[in-house]
Length: 344
Image (cartoon, rainbow, N blue to C red):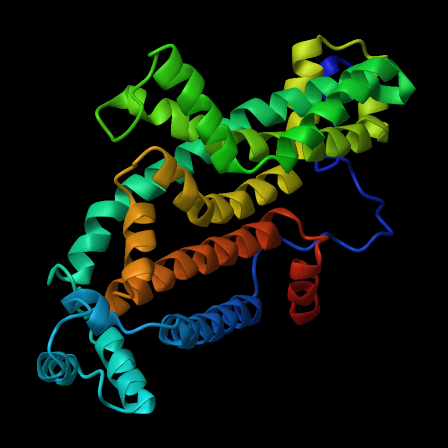
């Protein structure tokens, strides 16, 4: 007689002796090298784009810095000191040379090293994005699992309609509108949270919530679809037939097999939240990179703006690279790991 512990998940199910042995879940060096080359190529494109985007914005940064009434001689002298009178090719070459030496330049307006500006704001931006991602996953995965179990086999159509309608609406609303609503109601209206700045743990509540709502709704929809697919597998039918306790059925056997796609989406959302936090940071006057990015682009502060674009882009590329590697390890059936198997 079999016991509940004999229930096998798909990863534990025995294979036929006639079947070919399953390859180990490892990444071949060729796969990893290709991902590194793609990352390096993307970073190179990003460097060119960060330089071109700022220089294509109309306006003269020197006139904006010195004022419209500044003497032309002073403007020309300052332009020469900053190297802005050189051809664009020369400016780009100098820009790349500085990057390779680890020098991000100095702000035109504050004369502060750009590396110091980024060092002050980046930890706060990353903390905001990371906490928002964890919050979204913590809410979305149980919600998606609950919705799938409740609506499996076409049951409770009302619950399914309410879930899809509410999550669809939540995804459609931009993060900064959530931020404005939370600021007006919970901070300025009820006074429950600090309205701006970083003054303690309570300061994280509103911006993290504003950033997490839409991703949580998106992940919940994905988690429900993945859970519904798993509920129709043979190992789950066997587990149901053995009348396992609900916590063991769903937490031990079902949940681990629904997380690959969900965690992959979570990693991609993290990279999106890093860049999407710019507007939310401006709503809450958050001391991250968002405020400095908007100021630098508005002022045409070339070194700061270029560095901000480069940092945001590099973070997105690195997170996507790590997600690709993780997916190749966790899901050998994916297209990413298919090339690995061909190399094996």
